[in-house]
Image 1: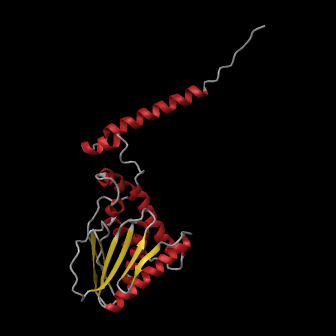
Image 2: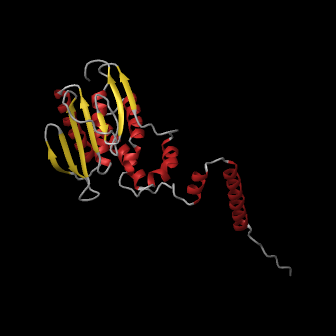
Length: 251
């Protein structure tokens, strides 16, 4: 009686398909022109989304989304403002990372967020009653919530608006804590011109928001958001500036 043996080649076919796909991807990668530094970083896996800075950026976006859920849903233009503010402040999220980490992650930051460059200043010009003050308050609250050792300075048109901004920031922080189910950060100091919070990353993680009337003669701090940048009626972060012109009455 003849005996027939059945051989299953499925596993071999699957392995062959994976090998062919790997060869195809390798060929595509070789055809892409890249700067020498970027090639080196890519091969060594240094630009993978493992840096703490990426997590902090996601945390900032999550905080803004928490404000949306808390009854303050942002308009289309406010979302545009915040995306550009985030771009200008990107470096701030790497402030406590090892030296050179931001440079190594630069290309990945652009790819992940769909940006073609990182602007250091943002100018916003809108009509009156366009939600500028609220937009700045929202973003300042999200930055203080997500970025370690950040200092945000906001220059307003008058004392009344500067105090209103500070109250709004405190309100939006409460909304963020509630909607993200996170224990509120400890308040180290709070008065009419500043709020100082103790962040969760370390005992020295002090997060500061300053809100000044523009008429006050205060020394200009290099906007560096090594903290965040934006002037909008408004904020500057120790490290980057956004310039925003109020073309009407305050909003």
